[in-house]
Image (cartoon, rainbow, N blue to C red; front, side, top):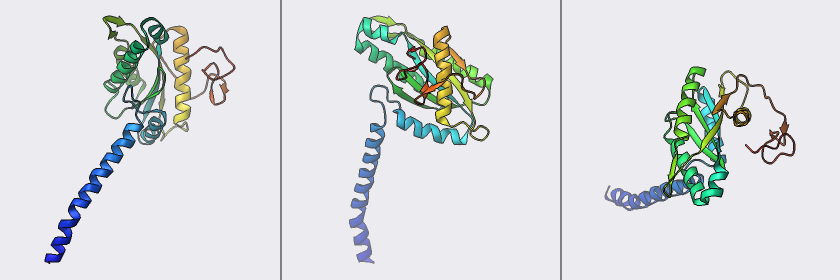
Amino acid sequence: MNQTLTALAAALPLASGWSIHTLWMRRRIDAARRDPLTGLWTRDAFTERAERHLKFRPSAVYLIDLNGFKQVNDTYGHDAGDAVIRATGERLRDSALGNSAVAGRLGGDEFAVIASVYSRVHLSRTLHALTEALEQPVTFGGFALEVTASIGAVLGDAGRDAADLSELLRLADEQMYRAKRIGAPWLTALSLEKEYTTVNGRRAGRRGTTSGTGLAA
């Protein structure tokens, strides 16, 4: 018995050390998968979590692009642009989309969110709340920086629809593009049918494509 207790006593610090090391490693990995400016998930990490989210509940996918961001950078400098991006990340985390929402920064001034939404009425309410949160001025260097957002949204239900996350993001991207063109704060897809042609897997007219209007979204 004494030998057993002695062995256990010797093993406890080692087990504790491994637990702390494992926790530390997990935190390092988690931090590496977050955007350093906003704390939101990076593209790959967002995709991984959003795909899991979509499997288990009816969801809305939102694609968000800031309007006037280049002008902020050009007029006030990149530090001001960083302040706008940082504020956008905070607002997405604190928005009325619910605790289960997954938000990511896809790059530049483009963001994506997936959140539980159960009807078009519910979707409309969340879009109102999201737009109101995102379009608050950002204070920087004594200036109130005015930035608006174009949002595209689409409802998806893995139990009912065949569309996967990439298709839903593609459809949300179409609606964001249309909203930006007509100056609307948001637009939602009424069906899962694509409206625009695709070039190299992306909407024609998207950055990185060589056909379409060439309008940067």
